[in-house]
Image 1 (cartoon, rainbow, N blue to C red):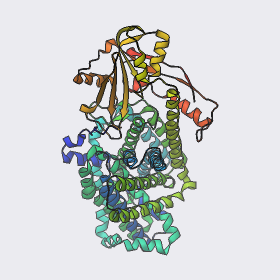
Image 2 (image 1 turned 60 degrees about the vertical axis):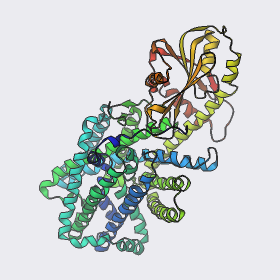
Image 3 (image 1 turned 90 degrees about the horizontal axis):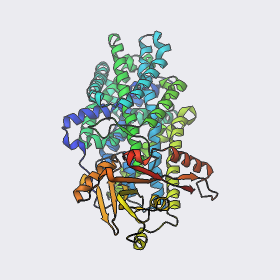
Image 4 (image 1 turned 120 degrees about the vertical axis):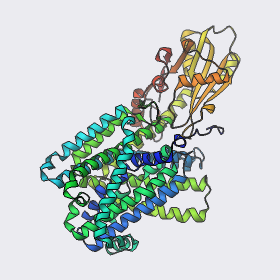
Length: 632
C-alpha cells in the first residue's frame, strides 16, 4: 500500500449521534438481542435439573460472560483495534499483517488465522438465521399444541421470504429496524423487571461466586454448561464488524445504556420465574409473558429474529466483498441495492448458498434445542482468533505496554479458550455442520490465493520488461492506429500478455497506450483525491494506478473521469479495453501443498468467476478479450 494513501471520511461523521444509536440497535444488536429466546432454556436443560444453586450459577455465568466477552473485550478493547474506523476479522487481519514480514512464517500464520476467522463467520451466518427464527416460531407451541405441526413449515416460509427479499435490498425497511429493536429491548426489560420485582433476591446471582461454585461442584456438567452459556454472547462480534457503519461511541452508548441492562433484566427475570415455577424451564422466555401478550410477543420475536438474521446475512455479503477485494475469493457478481448507502449490497451466489444451508439445518435438526448443539463452535472460534490477532496488533503496531496487554489478553484468551473447548464437545452432536462450512470456505480461500500466485508466476515467466520493450520500439513500427488502448495489468513493469497477443495477431499499437493497474490497499476506503496515480512513459505510453480500499466498489469509467483532474483525458468512445482471458490446463509438474484436486478446484473457480468487464463496470462494447493457454 502506498504510504501516502489515507482513509476517506466515514459516513457516520455526517449523521447525528441519536440516529446512529437507533441504527445500531437495529443492525448491531439483533443477534445478541434475540439470545434470551433460547439461552436460559438450553443452559438449564443440560444441567439435568432446576434448583436454586443451578439457577443462580447459570445466571451468574451468563452475566459475567456478557461483561467480560462483550463489554470488556469488544466494547472496550477490540474497538481500539480499528482499521481507519473499520472493524471485523479481515480488517483486523490487515492490521496484524503489518506487524509481520511478508513471506515469513509469522506472516503466514497471521494470514491463516484471519482467513479461518472469516470462514468461521460464514459458518455462523448459516446457523444464526436457522436457530433465531425457529426459536421465535416455537413460541406458538407455548400458546397451544395446535401449532406444533406447523412450526417447521412456518419457519421455512419466513426464511425463504427473508432470502428472497435480499435481492430487493433493505434500504426501504432498514429505517424500521431501529425502532422495532428499541421496542423489543423495552419488552425484554419490562418482562424481566416484572418477575424480578416478585423475586428480587435473584439479583444476588450477579455475584460471580455462584458461577464459580457451580463449575467447581460439578466440573463435568459445568464444562458442558459453558458450551450453552456462549449462546448469550453470540453476535458480540457484530459490535466490532459494524463499527465502521456507526462509530465507536454510538455502539458503546447503545450497549451500556440500553442493550446490556435490558438483557440482564430479562435473563434475571427468567431466573426469578424459574425460582417460583421450575416447570417453566420448558420455555422460560415466552412464559414470562401473560396469556394476553403471548401471541403479540411471538410476532414481535419473529420480527426481531428476522432482523437479527438480516444483520448476519448482510455481514456475509460485506465479508465476501472484502475478501474479493483483498484477493481471497474469486470475483462474484455484486449488486448495489441502494444509491445512497454503499454498504447495502447483494451477492446472489452467497445468498443462495446461505439459504440452502439454513433450510437444510432447519429440516435436519427440527428444533432450536437440537440446533443449539450445533451453535457456538463458529462463534467461539472467531472470537478466539479475534483475540489472537488483536494481541499481535496491540503489541506489534499499537505498542501497548506489556504490563497492561499481557494480563488483559491472558484473561480474554482464557475465557475464549474455555468457551471454545466446551463447544468442541458438540462436534458429534451437530457442531460438525458449521465447522464443515468453515473448513470448506477456508480451503476455497487458500486454494484461490495459491492458484492466483501460481497463475501470476506462469504469466510472468519469461515476460518482457516494459522498459526494454519501449527502448526497442520504433516510431514507425509497429504501425500506430488512432485511439486509446487500455491494458489491464497486475504488474506495470512488464508488458501485458494481452498486448503481446494484440501485436502478434493485429500487428498494430494504438496511438496512445495505457497500462492500468487496480490496487486494493489494506485500508477500508481511499480518499478520492488519492484515487489515481498517473505515470508518463516514452512513445505515448502511460501508466494509471487506481487505488481502492477493501470496502470500496471498483468503477473504472468513474476513475477514468477523475483523470481529467490531472489533465489526462479519456473519451470512452475512442478507448478500447484489452483484457487477458486465459484457458488454464493442469500441468504435470507437482507443487507442494497444491495437488491435482486443488488445481481442478481453482480452475473451476477461475472459469466461473465474474469477468473483469462486469466487476470493474467497463462498458462491454469497448472491451476486447485476448488470451491463450496456461499450464498450471
